View 1: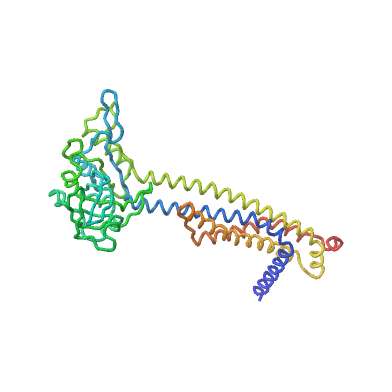
View 2: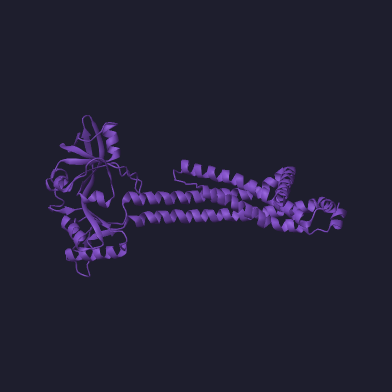
Length: 418
């Protein structure tokens, strides 16, 4: 019974609050403006941050987990240093040594190429990257075969003229036709398609990872690229997959030490190779996006503070204007807590209406950012609930003092007010 009476009283106070807000529409709108801007900006920026985090997670998964990429470096000659990749210093034997001599390594895959070439099927052609790989490459990059089979050790040993095609290449050369078993030509060399690679999407730099064909490394060397700088087993890159739970920094240090030993480098000589951890690049992008989102969310929080102060100001003015009304209510039996509840409900109602408009502005802003800036945004249901909670809290915190002042008025003094 008491619960029903309390609910009825709150409902009546809400109606009274709505009426008071309608009487002063312009003033109420200006008071809500800070709440609208604050809630809207916080939602939009948190959505940008969440979208960036989701995108980074996808990119790390597309790159493959726990990777260290070893690329060919440079050597100095007569005081002159070449740039990265100017001297091929890596071999397949380096990859074998890394895999067998470092316990933290799950697999090491040497590769060469990713060279742009024209691939031809019947009357269709497409310029794409051609990569020479070993069977370990798909494992370390966690790249699935959705149709057909992968390149095997037998294909590599026998320099078989077989090829794996990415989704973009398959779409542009074959349309809806199943490419498995069909042939394509690379530099006039016929290859048989044995597998269709799974979808990877864009990498951190916006490059289409599916615009690629892969052939056995030995085949690429003999039929397409030739020997790299005359070296029989030279490769441009070694992709190393570290076992789950192992420390990447420690594994990187072991790989560096092993390669320096194998290449006969003295302590005073620079590395003739480069080690990179792709996830660090992606995480740096994520950190930059997160800092920007925090910065803008902070600006939104300041707007919420300004909006709360605006609500307090409006409610104080309202208390002053309605002093006689408050006295009349007290004269007919209203208690101090009834007056407190009435004005507190008015403040919360004002804040919640502003919060509702702010949510709409935030969702619309996030959609606009996603559409025009082509940034991914992600709005979760929890974010809307939190926004409503924040708006309610602002109304309670900044509306309490005016409501308290109204509740503490002396009825006789209030009735004498003109």
